Length: 102
Length: 503
Image (cartoon, rainbow over all chains, first blue to last red; front, side):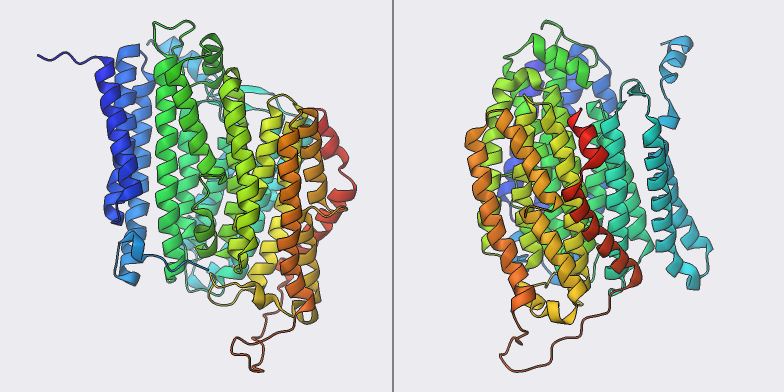
C-alpha cells in the first residue's frame, strides 16, 4: 500500500489548480473553459479535505459542502447563459463571441 | 459533542441582529409569491411593492442607526456587527433602491419578465449587507458567491440581446475564475493556520481574529504569503484593479444600464469593504501587503485614466473611469495601513461616488434607445437644448466624478489625498493628481457634447433627431434629489463627515 502524506495531496491539488487555470486562459471552447473552472474548485476541495484530515479540524469538511452547493449554482446559471447564447449566435467559441467592441 | 455545548453555541445566534437582511430576503420571496397569486393585470404593481419595501427598510435602518447598536460578534464569530456595518447597510439599501428606480425606466423598453429582476436584486443586496459584516472565511465566501451568481443573472438579464448574453458569459468566466483563485487562497491559509507543528496554530483558522493572531506569530511563512497573494488577487478581480480589469469594458457595455450602475457602485463598494477586512486580517504581513497594494493602486490609476481617453461608448467610458476611481480608493486602502482616518475617507468617497454615479446612470437610462448596449457620446449632442434638466443633472454628476471643487466628489478625493499625505505616500499622490487631470479631460469631452454640439445624423444629412422620451415623475425626482445631494454634501459634510473623522 502506498502511503500518501499531506504533501502528496497538496501537490496534487496545486497541480489540478494550475491545469484548470491554464485551461481557462488558453482553451477557446466555452464548455471546456467551464470544465476547467470546475477543476479549479475541485482542486480547492481536495486540498481542503486533506488539510482538514491532517490538521484534525472539522471546519474544512463542512466548508466542502458549501463549495459543492455554490459550484452547482454556478453551473446551473452558467449553462443557462451558454445555451441562450448558443441559440442566438450558433457558436460557443470564445474568439467568435466578440460583438462587444466599441 | 453533547447537548449543553451545542446549546451554548446556539446562544450566540442572535437572529435580531440580522433583521434587515432577513426582511430583505422575505421581501424578495414575497415578490415571487405575489406574482403567482395575483391576477396578471396587477403585476405592474410589483416593482412598486419592491421599491416601497426597500424604502421602508431604509427608513427603519436610519431610525435605528441613531440609537446605536451593540458592537460585537454573533453566530459563533461568523459575523461582526459594527457602526461601519450599519453605514454600509444604508449604502447598499440606497443602491438597491436607486437601481430599482432605474429598472422601472429600462425594463419598460424590453420584453422581459420584471418581477425576477427585483427578486434577484433584493437577494444580492441582502448578501452584500452580510458580506461586509462577515468575520469568517466561510461566511465571506458564501455571501460573495451569492452576490456574484446573482450578478451573472442580472448582467445577462436582457436575454433577447446578444450583447447582454455575451457580457453575462464574460462576467461568468472572469467571476468564476476570481472566485476559484480566492477560494484556493482561503484553503491555503486554513491549512497553514491549522498546522499543529507551527506556533500559535488555531483550530478555527478561518476566523479573521484567530487568523490574524496566527499570522502575527508566523510573520514569514511561505505558504501563508502565497495564500494572501491569491486572496488579494481574487478580491482585485471584484474591484477591477489592474491587472484584473480586462472584463470591465465589455461587461459594463453589454449589461442592462441599471445593472451596470449596480455593478459600478454596489459591487465595487462591497469589493472594497472586503479588501479593507482582509487587509486588516493580513496586517502582520504588511511587508507583503503594502508593496503589492501600492503597485496595484498606481497601475490602476494610470490604466483607468488612459484607457478611458479613447472611448466613444458612454458605458465603456463609465467602466474604465470606474477603474481609475478604484485606483483612488486603493490609494485610500494603502493609506489605511498606517492612518485610521483613511478608512473614513473611503466611506465618504463611496457615498459621493454613489450619488454622482447614479445621477449619471439615471440620465443614461433616459437617453438610451431600444438597444441598451449602443450608447455613444454623440447621442448626447444637443441634450442641453432638448432636455435642460437632464443636461444639468449630467453635468453635476460628471463634475462630481471628475472632482470639481464645490461638489461631493471633490471632498471625497480631498479626504483621500489628505490621508495619503499624512501617510507619506508622495509618489502615489503624484500619480493620483495626474489621473485627476486626465479624468477632467475625458469627462468634459462628454459634457461638451451635451452643451456645445448640435445633432448630426450618422449619414451627414439633416435627418430628424430621434425623439427622446419624457422623464417620468419617479425618475425625475430621483435625479433631482441625487444632484441636490451631490451639491449639498460638497458644502456641508455634517454629522457624517464628523463621525467618519472620529473613527
